[in-house]
Length: 326
Figure 1 (cartoon, one colour):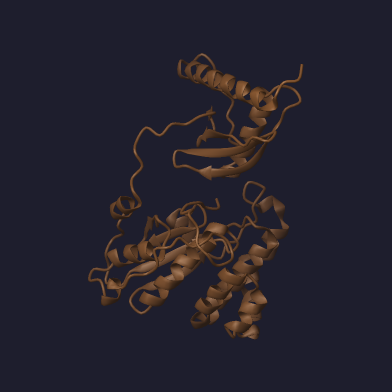
Figure 2 (tube, helix red, strand yellow):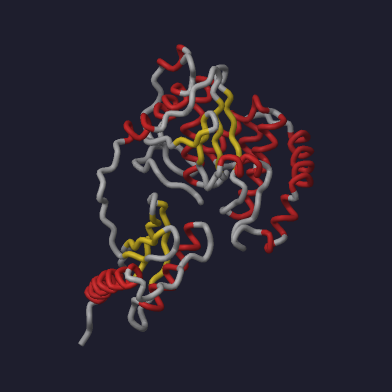
């Protein structure tokens, strides 16, 4: 008799829920100790461990699950998996001890407006605004599109800067682009916004260097010196130095990463406090920056875009206001 795969998956998931409840209760009572799933401190490592556990313990022989993506949901990670043609979600606690096949929201989610109001940064005469990104992180690119109009509006009133997470996740091209942008911002800061505006839309660094009229000699000299100062190439070539054995280090802003506890891209720090831009729009970001002024300038009365820009390279808008690379 031929069994429909979808029915089989449904049966397996129902059994998994029952097993999960049983195991959770046994662990809570101290009767058994569930093996720790966590391999590394990053979400994708935990997702890989969850897949291994599912394949070894929850699926019948001949059926395997594969990992699609891992999303940070606050107190847990949501792990989207693929079993046959289905793509269910499972959830893993951040300490790596518990796997759930279903999660239910017990508390109403705050509206974006109330979230923004509840996390206002400290006030100063001239706010300090830091955005930490990875140059090829889709969500970091999205936040840079949000950042640029606010920078143009308030650049003479506040201190703005783009900084880099101290590891990369998108191959060597990201290391090279991080270094390129770091040097343009350092050596020819006035040209960096034009370069960045081009890069987030087109993603072709040669074209963007030309459009922003970047001095290639200054860029090459800075890149060479910075590489030597922070051992960028040496750390890339030495895989034993990679974070969790997976992510090459990029240490040019390591001190600031440690100071602010930066965990991924994008991370926004205003007046030394981490804030969340939600929804991820220029208007919402502008409002956060303006809340950080002891005396907000007239520019804060201007309204910027309420559209959520697309993630990744390119123009356009999106309905997705979350996501991070970590």
